[in-house]
Image (cartoon, rainbow, N blue to C red; front, side):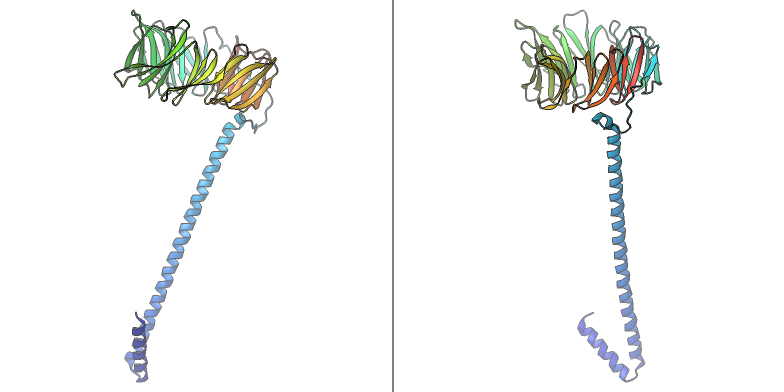
Length: 420
């Protein structure tokens, strides 16, 4: 309503009131009622806006609270999960009390970590134990043989190399078994359950057959008879990195090739390493980390660039092991033994001095178990000793399980489980 119209209405109302006109009184009352309704409407609208603002503020506060609770829960979980590995002992327990499992040791037994449990293969039977030494899975293999066992995360392959039979497990279930027509030399397994089987038949060439986790043949490649040092499956098994000995020169070296099932040129040589034999390797994205007889090498597959990370001297380097994104080694320096951990660009992470040269070391992710005559030092990648396990005699082997927070000490007549 315009200001002119309001003035006109007011004048008309006053004029009618002066003459005692009932119409004027009615108009006045109607006008008042209308103004009251407009006022109530504005108040109601303002209240709705205020309620909406309050509701939105409350919803926002609830969302913030939920996010904070989730973050706190996640941080607490991560801290509790990895505190001991990092070096924080939340629940101090300085005792080295172990859980003894008797009657499971044997010359033909095989000890592994599978699905974060401690696995033993004995008398054609698979058995897993938890951190308290409690048996939680048992599986009988019908065939009687001494197997080779290969594990990658939640997948496991058990092979009878002589008969060519392989059994594939996912978790606690056998998902397939298959017979290979030949004598199996070795098996390579990726995290998706794809399997590369290296075997020989009556011919001179070696055969590599790639199977999926259900035993279905994906493809077969024929390579020369040079010894295969390692195979890495990439691109979910569609490609292979093949590492072989190379004797084309006067000395034995290493040849690295790629087998690509998606291309016509199935085998392509990538690089030759003169006078270098590969003893261990790890594939991280496009980088192949190689331990050779005299150095650690980082070979980038896509860029075809080869860099020496760290030189190795047989008179100084006693032990060396590759981890997820770093390597550890024990080196002798002026009659002192240093435990070092370096990134793959050779940047130092930690360096600690050891009292004596250990019997052996075992690395698993963040932790390295350094086994000496009467104790085992558990050292994380940052050089912090998170636990010292006292032993009467060194075990012949150890198996790290339970996300690195438990270890099974393997002796000739018993197994001891120690928790961090």
